[in-house]
Length: 158
Image (cartoon, rainbow, N blue to C red; front, side, top):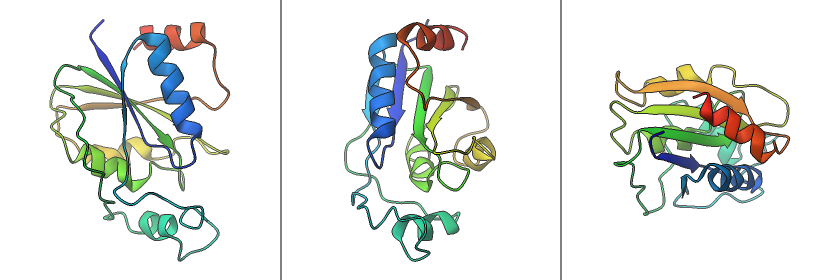
């Protein structure tokens, strides 16, 4: 198995816990995708059409600025990319991340946390942010804290 990178964005901490556990269980490197300006609770109020997250998600060209740290993706063939589902897709900061690196020839497998929706059109919404020879596949929702054994089996099937 090639060296795996678990990269994730977490606004509330739920996806962070899942990603940290996943990386630990499978012995992968871990990278947190951080916005240059952290999200506040008000920013995440999806019921407010003027909240930061609502404005970003209503504009598919929105690309939140990333914090200064860079991920070392060079030694990784597979990236497990995690995020919360927002409005049935990945938050636009995931596009910012994907557009910041050359993922040519790499495989990106998505995992997500969600309050109730599935991946929707997430894969389609992310494909334009990577080169044509980058494979992006829908992985799975990891809402219910799967066991270490279950996580290992999932990753082995990739």
